[in-house]
Image (cartoon, rainbow, N blue to C red; front, top):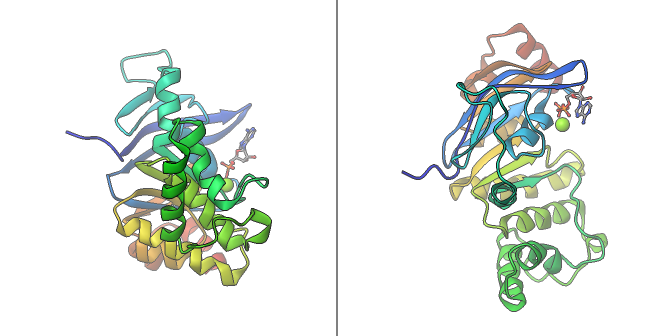
Length: 255
Ligand code: ADP
Ligand code: MG
């Protein structure tokens, strides 16, 4: 049985100093599913993504990502870390796209996309360049490979960033407010690329304020507030008929 492209989290707790940022979070994302996370600023959404890809260690609870288990097993009191090798592997198997595109400014779009395969995986440069061109075409940037980030619009830069993540052949993609820094007219082109990726069967967790995208694309939706998952379920159900007062008041503000 393959467990690739799956996420299971149980009882995740995370504090920074005295502040508990994640309170007993459970999350299950099956292979090929899209899970959207919504919630006010400071509710712990980014921290949860960072725990999933191992950028943060949890204080309690256990994660199983791509079949690799880390955290605290039920029977164990000591933290079970991934080995350095496994952690490095996970970094390639779990792609992450941020609000700020974080492209290398001194590299062309093509060089940005091929940098991971060449530097991390030791891939042949010619091969990596050809693949980068394919990936750029797949995000609607055919012929833009020679341009530097400063020569591209925000929407184009974010699509390069997505292509750069995909170049590592991840089984899971995490998106942290990928369209929040974009001019409104550029949001749609990035969402279209993400929609396409979802259709191709990528497992995705998407922190977003784009309720239309969440409604249309996600298999499940989580509403987080103050470190808790306040409500979860089918996106249409949660957005259309929220059960919790806190969800309702949040949605009234953003919709
Ligand atoms: P969200 O993404 O929902 O806006 P975050 O996960 O970024 O929320 O942050 C949740 C809370 O954790 C916030 O109060 C934030 O200030 C705090 N926090 C996040 N990262 C750190 C950190 N590295 N050190 C201290 N506090 C942090
Ligand atoms: Mg955040």
